[in-house]
Image 1: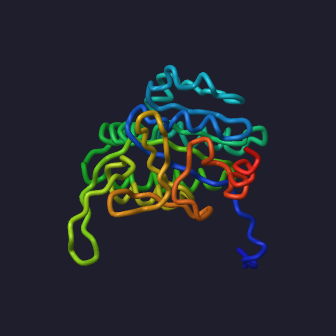
Image 2: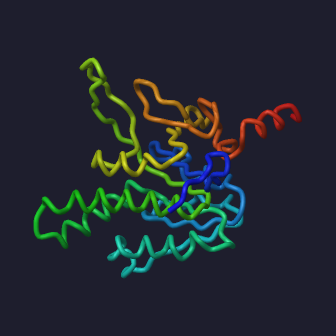
Length: 230
């Protein structure tokens, strides 16, 4: 262990999570990530959404890997996340992953009291492992509506990434630099990057409050340069 001057700290790869309803463009947004990408789908929703992907390898799990997903996934990330030829990892989608991991632990646990600590530990360790790769990480999730209580006791209903266990959700989302909610209104897609009373979101990379999918992985400076050029 050693102290590091804050000015000398090397920032690792950025982590993005985009959530929303089906068909809003969560997976398609990943096509705008630059560099060599590996996409690991957990559900069967890739049909007709990956035609525009370049420099992307899709990994199809076999039945044994699906059955032992809690063991397979960390090994997969260690194998490909630290590969110098890989620039980005895409996990599609974490809501389905949550359901699969829950089922695995439910079958193997002797008591229901064991299941949720295992889930919480799995997602906390998963987020840390993704961060350690130093790669660009892009994760998709379904959206859910969650009831919350504000600091003065008022009731709020907010859109959230669908990870049902609150502790698992918070520990997973906590390490992401960007969490955005994507919507598609009359064919116009937009990603909200700032929280409000109705929507959970965050952006600690820059000051943008929203972004088009094609601009999500660009800096504010790059966006302005392109706008001037056009």
